Length: 197
Image (cartoon, rainbow, N blue to C red; front, side, top):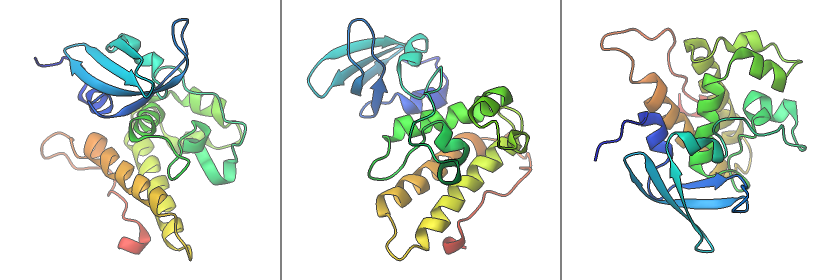
């Protein structure tokens, strides 16, 4: 059966992906693996075997990274995390699963400028452009490329973080940059990390 859901959302709620569900009256917050997706329903199973069914897209707000953004983490350091870190985007050994990281990337891409300002009132959020704009996508792509470059130049780079950032950059490019209208020119060139140039 073909789903009428947005392909970006379907890529995040795909069988085998892990999502972090928020607590409800009937369950604790926990990671759940997507067991199956059919039409507008997703069957999920926790590590302990608990099952739940989400109606899509309505229940996506129960998945961390969708709907209301998470609170700014107590450990947040603006110099280290920037705007992505303010939304608790984390890669590497202590990072989030791909579905959660990519949910945050989509949220940051689509978030109104006022939401960015609420997260980082001291950063010039206007440099991030309007929601779903080419400027916003360019800034996000550049931040990921910068993290890849900086980590690659460390004497002992964090391999898992590098893999996560490269994977997320490729996913972001394939999801939001490559599908432009046929023949349309992009307003910017997708960045290549320094060590790969």
